[in-house]
Amino acid sequence: MVEEVQGLNIGELPAPADQPNMIQWKVTLAGPFVIGRCSEVLPNYFSNVDDVSEKGLPPSPDGVGNEFVYNPDIGFVVQGAFEISSSELVEPFVVTAGELMTMWRYKGAHVIKALAPLNGYVCITPRENVNDIWNRSLVHLSAGIDSPLVSNESLDQYVFVAKGVCTDQNGNEYSTNGIYKLDANTTYTFSSFMSTYLIHIWK
Image (tube, rainbow, N blue to C red):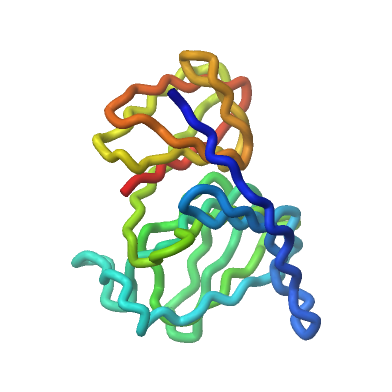
């Protein structure tokens, strides 16, 4: 059984008057998550990301770098491209449409800036404990091709429709920006008539 998690739309977070180029977010509360969405963002609009050095987030694994920690935000670029930069990073890096942000983030303050003529981004954040580690993986459904998603043993897992729409083998519909609770140890076979991106999230 697939259960859609009902969300409470709490409206927009507008840009501050003194920073009109700040990205404006539309925010929804759904289950254990806060879902922020921005769309049709013009180039050079930006969002400031706070320093988390003192928040006790789990450190990154060996090989990622001491300046990185676990990223509680699950970010996905829907449209365009965004640059992540900081005065302390050796060089900025760019995330483009169809890409999921890494599970490890730079722990210092940094800026996310829109690059393309039009840009869109979604960010999913835990509502309560940001130190809870939520795993995430991206599933891309090509138009007209069935794609399986095998849920794991976790009793706390979801799928978020970041872009597009789809159905599963039982005819259940999954809508854009919808988040759905999945059963454990179950194979879901998704199909779509358009390119669709799902984010599988679990503890």
